[in-house]
Amino acid sequence: MNKETLDTRLNFITKIIALFFLLAGAFVEFMTLTTPLYPPLAGMFHMLAIIMIVVGAVSLIAKII
Image (cartoon, rainbow, N blue to C red; front, side, top):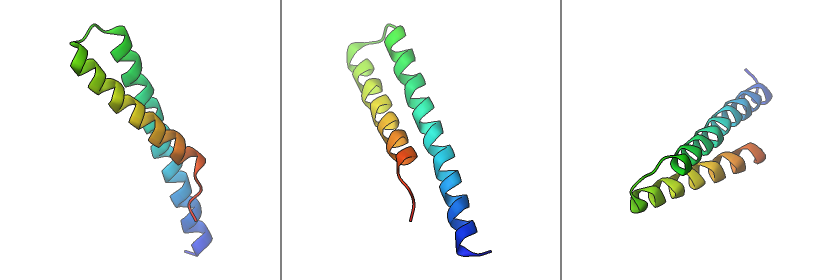
């Protein structure tokens, strides 16, 4: 395999994983907002969801060299 093919596959796999993180973060955030939870626990889930959303969004935008 040549370098371009490997880069293309790596970019594709990275975008799929980023999309998964973005959707999983949005799902966790939605479920945290719609479910009554113990407040300190809810804050932890909010932070986890925000981190997942940010990582997913940045990974979707980024281009692997």
